[in-house]
Picture (cartoon, rainbow, N blue to C red):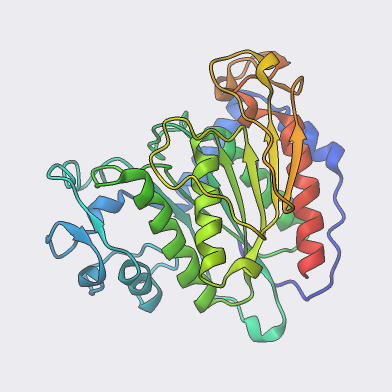
Length: 327
């Protein structure tokens, strides 16, 4: 999945061709997600309490920690991730851990080493779905994972190195589950940035996942990693009922795709004020009637906007532009 790209090479794409793929059938999306899962390591973060003390923290940075960064070995980068966090488990936190892996809330694809000294750049694609998410389920966080896999296809066609990782907007079996998801993702990204300084991240969040990625971006900004963020894409970001951190980064670029109240449905997004925010109203954009389950293209509502080919088209263009600028 990773390939080398010298600095400055443009990324011409044919959006019409990609948009045609975006309008593919539900079986095409399901096949994309199945292949992605096969190429990924899948974990329940609560199951990473390898020393059994009821917390995920530096005490789990041992040889018993599984590979959580996707490079097929447990090394200093894996240890750096758990050393950065202190996540308390609930009493039932380890239920389901074993051969079935529990409820999957962390997915990371292969991450072969790249040589940043050669002037290469790389993109980490990090989508986060909304609501309760089990990442082993093809119907959950399906739209955002599918969208960023299409972005990955575009990058791969242009010999751009990329990696895919995603977290559920709430970890299972832990205390402060949404805050824990923010902290886990932040720790992973910062460990990867230190290991591979030519890495940049593009994030995508739908609904509560939009609140998750803005919190992650704010954490990165506060820790001095703002220049590592290509773009933060929001699709109908919702903070009602979100118990994590309702905060926005002040400098990293945000593209906020939202539906207004005329779109119908119980939830919808809203414009966001900020000099680093581009608000893009998508009311009237088309999406499959049944979201990840397909159907005729109809005006999008909150529950299917993350499957909209119109939104995907806009994301593809902006990823190309952002990567070209930072290259």
